[in-house]
Length: 475
Image: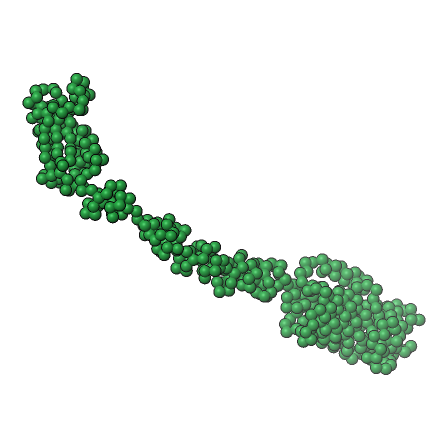
């Protein structure tokens, strides 16, 4: 039996050093380790070995000093499993050395007991938290060593005799935490009748330290995974283990703004500017605005929010970023429609004056000077085609203006030849313009020969400048 006791201790040490997390719905497993005392009172024996019964068996049950066989070290181990509806099952065993058999003294007989019990907790019924009263019913088997039944007999030990029993128990636990408790339990073993009468009715009293475990709390929020709706994220009991990060009473999974405290009417989001548009939908969360403008203001009511309106206090079209269209030249044709925004004109002429401006006339003159002809002829060189097309565009832009095409030459050749050549070249320009869409009634041509030089004919560059065509407004 000494080896048995040693193995028991080793087993208990191994059990206690395993991973015990936190016997109830959350922590269904329980290991109990402690002391178990055996009381055979009032069973006794005569000198001839016959048992005797003196008094009521349930009398003097707690006479520890006279009747209990109390061990000097841990001798009791129990393993339990919570079932459901406050019921649990426990399987346990103990080892004792019996020196008191009822009122008799004996020579340290070996006693072993194993038992199973279906227990019912009264804690919920009595609405207790730390204290847990319980009752149990079960069965077991006890072995007692045969031997001398008085202290004067020093004969050798005998074989172990065993017998089954029906057990009834009652006890109470005190839980220091979800995992650690202390339990006292009294168990009455009503043995079955047999021929040996070695093992008689007796009590077992146990005092144990209890360890509950088996529950899992992955996120460490004090709510076990079994009951935790969010087992991987720390939360609060009010939301079955799910978090409410901003503390606004709306759990994160239902909170559109889980990091910022808000209102239930806005699904957990705030409305900082109080305009009835929650911040998550408000493009201007710090400035009160309109719901149709996504929470932004529109001071001038032009349908453009102030933050995008270049002129927030003056109504204007979206095409001009909320500003009224300007009319720089004051001709009642707004700049965006005015082809001459810096020069007053008429609506019929798209904001431009009916006659070309001095600037336009200078442009025509500049273009005309670049027109090249074949040497000594009136035929236009192909390179001048692009310039002439630009002149056509300008003339068409002023449909009510008339123009004079004037030709000029240098002094090379006779005066008569140069006069004729200048007239022919001016006429060829008119022909080109009319053939490209300019009304011929608006054009006239004239030749000045060599009579109107603009530079000296004594130099090559000067003569080149004198060989020219001019397009002038016919006033």
